[in-house]
Image 1 (cartoon, rainbow, N blue to C red):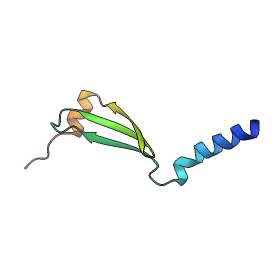
Image 2: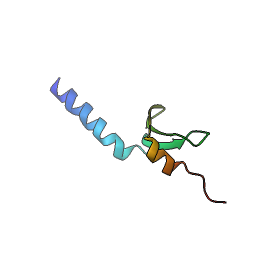
Image 3: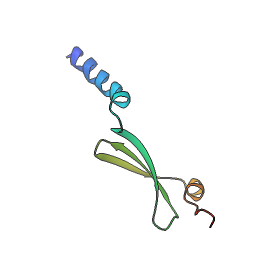
Image 4: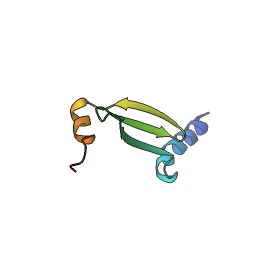
Length: 65
């Protein structure tokens, strides 16, 4: 059982460095530009979290014309 746990830990820790774009964090803004969301992607699955409003205001501001 112990070797299996060591193997699982080794695969889990090495995955971030060896599998290109399998584990990624992406920042996106809502369509109205008022909120930002961070999506932590684990292959095809992801977990999303809202960004603080003050940070979203900086990240999602519209470029000057």
